[in-house]
Image 1: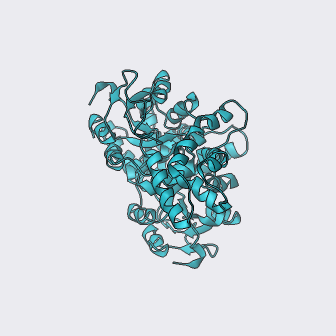
Image 2: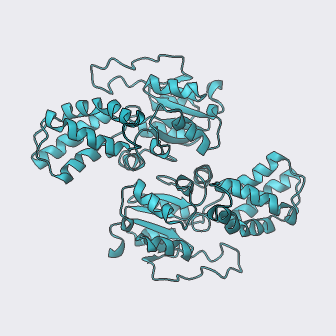
Image 3: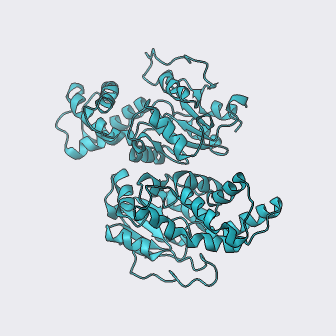
Length: 239
Length: 239
């Protein structure tokens, strides 16, 4: 185990992309459901088009255009905007709610449950995710993610990479930043955490956005750990 | 399974007394530690005397005498007050901190881990406790309590039985009160939850305060469930 990370007590994870395969899960879940419901839509286009609204939606909160609004609500707003573009029309209110809650039903990457189970033996583990509490708790139940606690950004009423999210975990757990490690498949998230003194682990997920992905393929700084997946991270962390 | 509770999705627990044996754990933990450190004190008297300060300490926050203050800080304040009475003196700052953090090292009642593990198969389970996040997360790690999420009163900045604590769980999880069940060994806690529409389960813990206990020996209302322990609760809840 690297001496750089020997003081770490809590390991927190970005979830969308890092722990769960949001794109593949959305396509699988809604393709099956759509077939059963007789709904014709391009679910792959939905996953990609919907996610394009992710930053603009969070920016509405960050810029103060709207007050604090959680991710389920931002997803619903974005879904209303993009649905017609991908062939979704004439859905009932409860069908639209079912589509929106697909983010509660995402599956882990194949290494997620095993890697987290190993890390949990020695560390407190949790998501530090822009997802709201219900989304993350239901996702954990669906995917079998063995979190010790859900550190949702909803608790801090800021989205990452706002400093209050990373520091919020440290404060709730009475730890110094160097005792908390942030793990993500996204360099921007680790850069924000490192700037505040947290330890960092990068796990590339080169097909998060599908086969044509061009971003976050490599570590852009000398992160404390670079691991090929969560099982490898557990190994490098001595568990 | 009783039809009264068929809509329940989340089961939350009072922890001190209901899930963990705070009194027995404090006496055991500090007796061993005191012997190793060469500290002579009446640890049984400490457990009882310290807990007598529990309501007065929370009342300082409830009455507005002090602003929001979490339970670790209230415990530390009460410990300073009662230490000399039970023979604790001349401890270093780090020794006092070790004593105060005994609340993070409480053991479950013998049925706790098995009962919770069964309930977790079907329900989202968590503490709804006056303990703060770090205390409850560390306690769960110590005692092996398999929570899905920690619903600490620290998140709501109110102590039970304030309505915002029970309703806070409902809001975070997007559930109606009747979809949430409160479990406790204390009638006052269930009365507050029922008044807001939550389902209720009573689990008597007749030796929580030792062999001379006179309170909460029996259910004082027709709670939705009365169970002899958490394993029996799991059975009655169909898991």
